Length: 138
DNA sequence: GCCAACGTTGGC
DNA sequence: GCCAACGTTGGC
Image 1 (tube, rainbow, N blue to C red):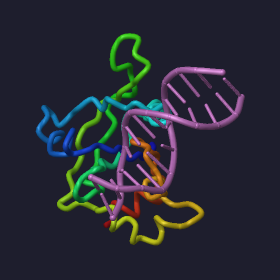
Image 2 (cartoon, protein in one colour):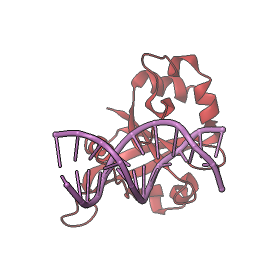
Image 3 (spheres, rainbow, N blue to C red):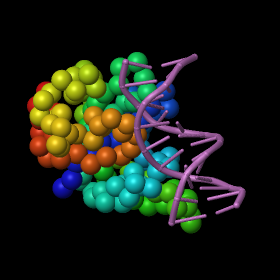
């Protein structure tokens, strides 16, 4: 059982778009970064992930999704993969990036959350159980 | 819209 | 295999 964080630009695909899908399921495609793809390949059915809105007015975590199908090619012979995810919960309010930055446990200089690191651009990152528990309690 | 940070490309 | 140039990301 592993935890992840998946970024999406809400202008492209938001948590509300997911909520409106049949069974609240979607294929998470469009990842064009090898490191992110390799993380995707490590996902297992039942893994949980934060849904993160990036490049928008208020960036932050907006809900929780579950991996329901492990990675498979976007098309026949494609080098890029996708996974299928299902909405578990949309948070009543966004956990903003600003809020995340204000939590000391997530900003330990020796072991801070990847999403909070300077220059981070990865669209898929692992989340530790400690980070997960801390954030879900907010 | 700016720009720092980073990944990718491609000539050599 | 190096590295400059370029493109993209994403917070601000």
